[in-house]
Length: 444
Image 1 (cartoon, rainbow, N blue to C red):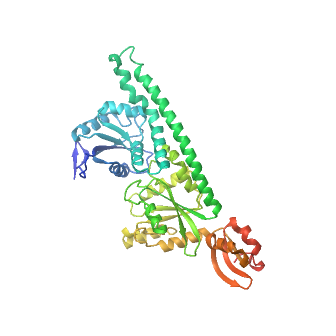
Image 2: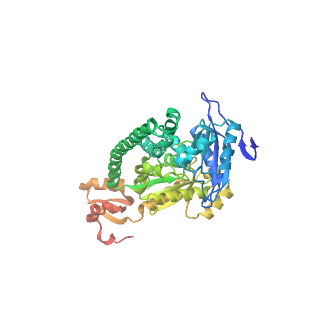
Image 3: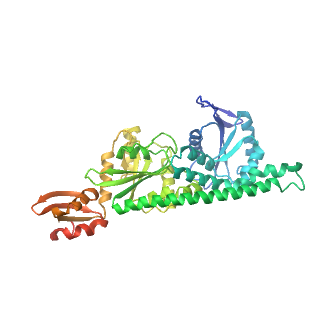
């Protein structure tokens, strides 16, 4: 149900009965000349984020601006409009779609109502991350991003103590509030240092795990994509991983690596990573660096795309932007359009014509998975050495290595050993080359 108050779009409550009342939120979006997606599309996503965090969106306010207002982000008239709508709808939360500076947030709180929380997209995403982080590393990464976000905002949080002490005026501009502010700044900086130290240790452990995978010679595939594109579901479909997969934004934050046995018998690793999003805060990219490094360490990237998303092009651009930001843009990859079971035949045909080099799958039904595995197998073979070798029966361990790490085309048992025609990863060529049959070492 939709209504309006003074021309402002208002939504009927969408509450689900719970033990505690859900907060009532108003969303605020600004259309800037530099913005590449519509404010309505961005607010649709912000509404899903708010619902994921446990709030009901009861209204929206939008404004077109050439540039953000340095004091309140939106214009002064729009601030009054926000305050009026907050009172009319008994809202207790206002969420801005863009990141607010500490002074903008403080000025808005003074102008709207001190009892009403004013937060931005970054704070909302951090709140969702805090809800969904499960591993120690994930929780530390969220805490780091929260403290980095909090540090520059401490002044506004303690301003009321500085102004209220001794009734305000001369002699009260410094004192308890300022002292407490400095204490808290030191505490937050110390906390950031401590978290960074713990994360560095865990990053070292993760690096050793990655190095072990690299030394194993296994081909490494990473899943990257927009949040809720179905990466975890695809990992489950490929590897029977049993990873949590909900229809929620940021349902999983921690990277998960599983082994996948390709149809020809070769074993590779597949890693699921944290989902991306429009306007992904830099603090989050930095905090989740060790998790995102799983993408950088991959030989091949599957860019998982929600084929049903209305703003699919924007989501693709957002993912490509983050891959560029973390230095992973040059890694070979293919686009994998997921959820095709929800498309009509005509919609799927149109998508296939528009993206002829992409893969099209349904992680839910398994449609297209065999073709995707074939594409992965081709990628794993690319750049490898084609050899025909005769391995003595006394060197059975090398035959085992061939089965585990190489793609075997043909295997025959001769009188003096096992004859294998195979693709060998560059790392293992020196071990197989001494047994190569001379007339077949130059390729197919």
